[in-house]
Image (cartoon, rainbow, N blue to C red; front, side, top):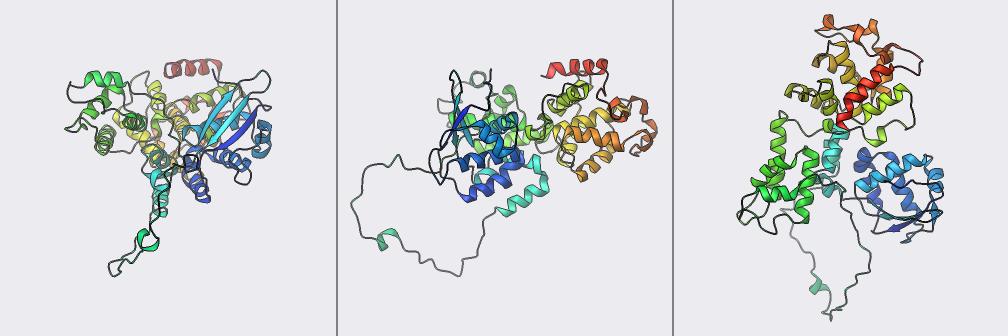
Length: 428
């Protein structure tokens, strides 16, 4: 059970790295689209708490963070979890009778080069900003290449410039250096199963070292690969000496994903709504409960629920990919659109109909579930439905109640809510 964070709880910041102004630029341009502005602001605030480059801050309480960030405690805790997940923060807790004490260790963000070559972070950035902005950021951080063919290098070497000196043998282990923390991804792969499933003699004790296991778990997370399938892909990536070719494994996993998704890039159809785009907790109305379902269900599972448990077809998956990549809709927003479209189109997913709405939402920057519901209520009433080739087949009477009811707290019947929650229960 997670500890309950209180305003009076004490925290101390420890700097475990060398943080620079360049780190701020990387945080804002590359990390913020993934973890959100509150998480970045929290990191910068903790950094500021160190005061004049000190290695450790004075003792502060969490009310200080609430006042500084102008955010409630629950949002600050969510932001902290986001920093922990991407390796920017480690948190330690000492439980005490009155006020608990926390240690927050700050770590450097990855360099732009490391970020764009990270299998998880680079993919999450692409999913959150879209292909056009991703290419722009990639170009921005590319190094400058100058043609030096007509130049002769005349750089001085160390022994040309300085006289030989007697080396000082002692290691300076206490000197600060840039320190980066690992990305926190829960292990989803059963390596004991994989080892048992591979032929004897194909692998050795060095095959699955720590770095290789981290990579495999990262690839499983990004490309939604289970243990059994990963075992087959690993088999195709083992060298003659029993080691896994990391680059080959990445290529094999990516090609397997593209084959199963008609060449699409990995997307957010297997993710839930990002924390920074979720509505504040505490709304217990029917609408609030429905928003919670939309936000905490993966589009894949939501569509599977609508299919009465049947897996989405390749055509349906392609539509989900289209909404996620081409129109850059977050998972919760995709769920709202899917729910609405199925209800008004006689239980069918009509691609032209979905794109008619999705293109408008992309232009308007619809990113949250409440905004998606509100824009449907305002713009897609019975008399103003999007025109598609199959408009004549639309069953307006099946539109969800929250589209047409104005200024009411109870916008979904108890029966509808129970049915939706019951259908979603299997995916929790």
